[in-house]
Amino acid sequence: MHGLQAGKLVRYLVPDGAHLDKGQPYAEMEVMKMYVTLMAPEKGCIKHIRPEGSVLETGEVLSHTVDLDETLGHHTQSSLHVV
Picture 1 (tube, rainbow, N blue to C red):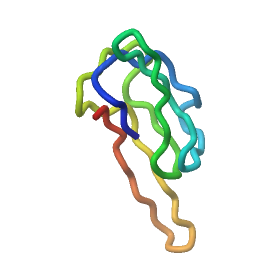
Picture 2 (cartoon, rainbow, N blue to C red; picture 1 turned 45 degrees about the vertical axis):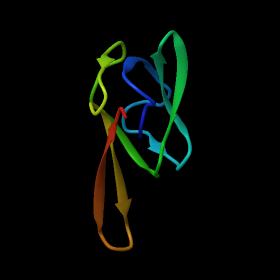
Picture 3 (cartoon, rainbow, N blue to C red; picture 1 turned 90 degrees about the vertical axis):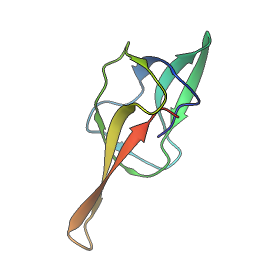
Picture 4 (spheres, one colour; picture 1 turned 30 degrees about the vertical axis):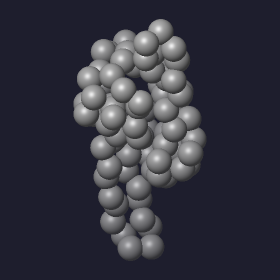
């Protein structure tokens, strides 16, 4: 999950551990005095890494998603960065 640029993580829109669908809003960032909604690029369960109110630079990890593939019996993990 990517932000447009460095800014402040205002709030998460879903609780830690929640399931996300691809394209679902999951957080809001303040960038240059504007609020930007971040959307999930893939489905999975979210694990928050940075607390609300954090000032994030480009490339920093906001959270991780874990996609449980029940058919194969394993999971994949992705990091969500500010871009």
